[in-house]
Length: 401
Ligand code: SAH
Image (cartoon, rainbow, N blue to C red; front, side):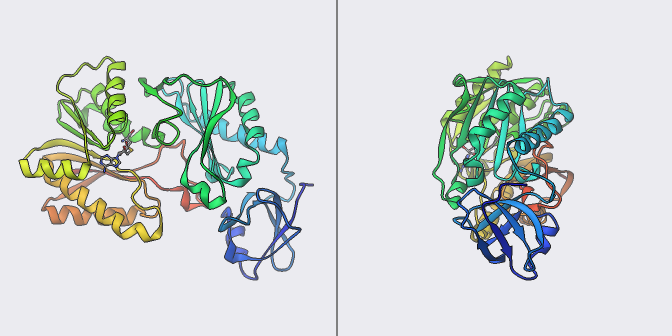
């Protein structure tokens, strides 16, 4: 038997999402909690007539009161269970056959891998772990030791320096969890190209791994060979390196951070791309694009990969205005026949809404555009069908005609 520390009883008629295998139990669905469980403890989830539904971990401090670990009555959730779940998630990554061309990818995608609150990314010999909930926080030492055993990683660092931890009553934290501290620059490969990653200071866990397949799509000669590119929100040059490898013409990279642009330049050099025509411009994307519009500068291919604009429901409208503004500017800067790769990683702005916003931008800019590809997150960031919240990255590859 699982060692439950309490029972969470649902209100009458609130068992449907649990039966449909949605992993979150919100405070509003909870009738009572028996046994006084501590934050992170395992609880049995039962319906209003005491029928067993699932095993979950609990946190009274979070609006998401419990996250379901298992819907199987026979599952005993102990250390061996966690080990098996990690092993299964890692096995699914091996099945994607990313290695050896790609050595940085997500091993565990939280709820979508049946391990709520846990993110684990691999960067060559090192792993980066994010504990997003109390349930994972309390088990991270055990999880790190299991991961060491399963992957043979030289070291595991924690990058739990994310805002969502506040909602669980947890402070931001980062540090070494197991093995050795990685060097300041870890070299990884993506589609055979080389990147230096700073696992302690980089955004997220180091790279935006979710964009990998979109970088590869854009990095095809048929789209970029000989073309003039504008890479907006360039970060450490992911799109630029792939495009350069495909024979792109001059690339203008824009980012608000000088440090990441220096890293982008290093990553180009790391692949032997000595290209005097490329530019690295530190500044606010909105301002730079407006300046280009005013001065009549034009491009053949524009990539718009902004940071998350909508963090809560309240932000959705202003976020959409931001996306519209950016896309409107991009449409104005494209030469006829040009391509626009436009993205949003705001989970609260779904693919339909995003497409409407881009449509509005095109109409206002007076441009006709065709969708060549609808884009999403890479398959090592799978979307669980029963958990639509796991879909957050969407994009369109458009041709302006
Ligand atoms: N395309 C990148 C990831 C982009 S992440 C890749 O594939 O790796 C978003 C980037 O936008 C970050 O590097 C951040 O520094 C930058 N950024 C955030 N706000 C900005 C702004 N207003 N203007 C320009 N860059 C901005």
